[in-house]
Length: 315
Ligand code: ZN
Image 1 (cartoon, rainbow, N blue to C red):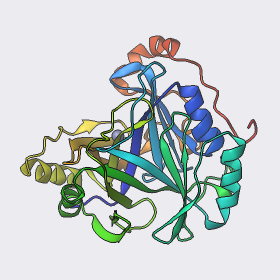
Image 2: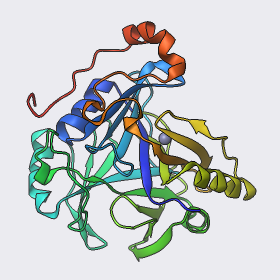
Image 3: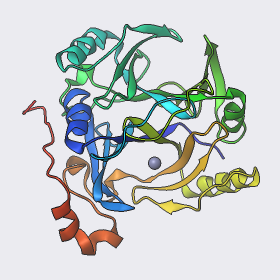
């Protein structure tokens, strides 16, 4: 009973328009779902991902225009890395520069070239040139398919005590240590490689992260079915972790617990997926609400800001 890789990453951003202009207009991701924060339906919850809305490609945001800025640091997921074709590095360096994104010199990590950059809220992201990623590109994004992001490559967790975090990941969540380099340990689940890799680094205890705009709220690991999630929930609870009941997130079911390093972990099911309430070719085009909010649709729609979604025709 194991997780098989990354399902999604959820972060907090400033206002929604600037956020989607960057993730759709610059990074070329697809709007996979446009919905609201189920606990605060006057604000959006935006899901970006690949053309199919596949787990392992999904980056979601709570865009809170007036929330305080956070600090990235120890006890958090401190970098989300996206996979790009190896030949596309020059394309991406030019694209980030043209769009005024801040980026650093490329570095080499576990044999891949890594281009660190930041989103408009200063959140750290990376592009990893991975010639072995066989996932399909989205044909209709703002980035030509030959250069398009394929989904996540990996995520980096910064924790005060990497051994304790690694122990939960390897003993309970199905990760195995794949490599270490320069104080960074890479763990892989499922088939390994792009979308299934998590790096753990030791963060300093005097640079603790603080939740807010520009920080990651949680990372979700995927399980193939509800039964696996139930078994994992029992195992995690038996270890003494405070794990939530199973919550219905409409597109997946979720449980959450905080790992020993302070990062909020979610375990999310692959089913039912993002095509559960709109067809594949319409993903992200309609405001979708869970059944229990439908009766309030008029009020919710009128309180949400209008969004202009970039397309390959209009960027
Ligand atoms: Zn989540």
